[in-house]
Length: 155
Picture 1 (cartoon, helix red, strand yellow):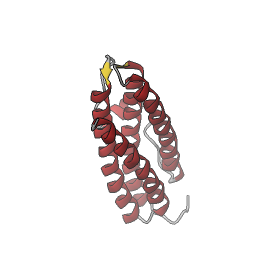
Picture 2 (cartoon, one colour):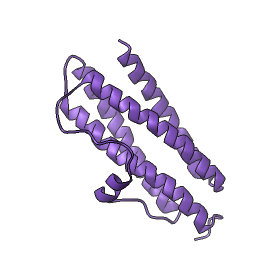
Picture 3 (cartoon, rainbow, N blue to C red):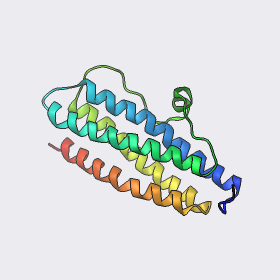
């Protein structure tokens, strides 16, 4: 493969992307869990919003995995690998109220925003503007959704 990047450069970027991928897979499962197990007065509001979130996360999962492949590297693909790599905590399959679930998702989104900023630096340091642009485009969605969750929690 000759795309103007050395293997050490694509490997460094793929490592950062695989961290994001593992976190995405875990966060997707957590948000879908909250979507299913949400209880309380904010059910109708957050149930729908969590579906939007996990749909976005599913799109991100596919985009990130395909980016790793386009760099000639291999994306993480097993649950075992995701769980060994992720820094996002799993959530138990138990009923959860709106504020508690929103605080949890907000903390994870804020972690992802910081991770993306670090990953953009890795991409830029390894001459990969394509990955940097892809990650930059994602930050805006996480920032907007974080703002919405903070506004919800301020009720």
